[in-house]
Amino acid sequence: GENVEQHPSTLSVQEGDSAVIKCTYSDSASNYFPWYKQELGKGPQLIIDIRSNVGEKKDQRIAVTLNKTAKHFSLHITETQPEDSAVYFCAASIGSSASKIIFGSGTRLSIRP
Amino acid sequence: GAGVSQSPRYKVAKRGQDVALRCDPISGHVSLFWYQQALGQGPEFLTYFQNEAQLDKSGLPSDRFFAERPEGSVSTLKIQRTQQEDSAVYLCASSFPVRGETYEQYFGPGTRLTVT
Image (cartoon, rainbow over the protein chains, first blue to last red):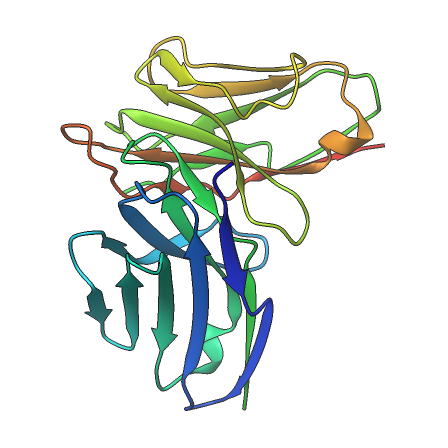
């Protein structure tokens, strides 16, 4: 079946450095790729998303890139801050349907002061 | 405005008991989703409603799981005869799709279910 693989599972970076999280997906029909941040005891919060008709999207310190040929996409966080510490999930739509997204297994990001 | 709310936030049930988890989506959001999140894992899709119609329930793990959204707003996820493997966080999300396009899903805080 369809799946999304996410790496690394844990990531520790020095404050101010950049963090990169990578995901691959299996369904070539997927056309929507959101990224979520989840803090302890809270639900996932959408931080950025990208659709299949663009290759890159930026929002302040966060950027996402998409390579449809290779079926992988990445999250880049620059100038990391302590409040960036959380679990990050990538996700991909199943086919072109609006009804279902499948999540990766998550990356626990820790920012060292 | 108000986000997605879920109640209760925590639920402890003895094995074999029935539980009901409630989700109040963002006002006006047509689509509503339920997910199950095991400890240390990503959310897994359970079921999806568009208004009151349950369009996809392929993720429900067994016939002990039942979801409804009778008036197209509030939704309830019911688990009958709970088992220990049902222990997880149950997340609800809502969104407002337009012309079939996938739109952002907004998640509630979840209900943590512990079956003892």
